[in-house]
Image (cartoon, rainbow, N blue to C red; front, side):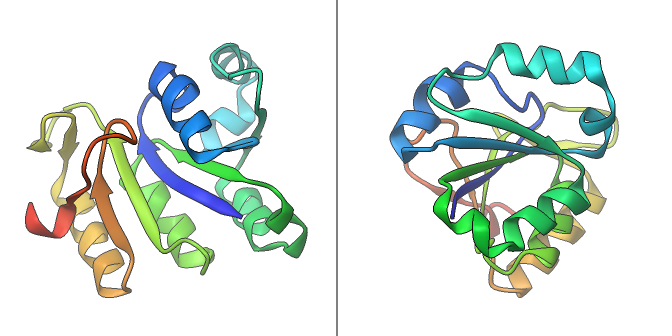
Length: 156
C-alpha cells in the first residue's frame, strides 16, 4: 500500500528518514528513478541515508510502476520517492493507487521559479502538474508531516 508519494530531489535524507518514515509507519522506501537504478555508486549513496526500520528498493520508473500495481505490494507500507515532477507524473499515470503527491523539495535551476520556499518548478512541470490536477490527483507541499498541507492548485 502506498502511504505517500513524494517528490524530493534529494530522494532519501534526514527529513525522510527521521520524520516521514516513523510518522507514516513505512516499512519500505521505493526510489523510482531510471538514473539511480542504473548507477551502483548512487544506489550505495542513497542507501547510506536509509533508516534501519525500513528496507530500500531502487527501481526504474517502469519497474516501480509494475511493483506498485502488483497485488503483492499491498502488504507493504511504501513511501515512494521520485526526484522530479516528470517522474511523479509518469508514475501517477501508470499507477491508479497514486491519488496524492507530496512536494518536498525541488531546488531552483535554470528556467524554474519558486512556488513555495522549497519548491521550484519549470513551465513543463506546471503543465504536468495541471494534468495531474485534472486527473483528480491531490498535489500538496509539506516539508515534514507536522506542517499543514499547502495545496499546489492554490499556488499556480
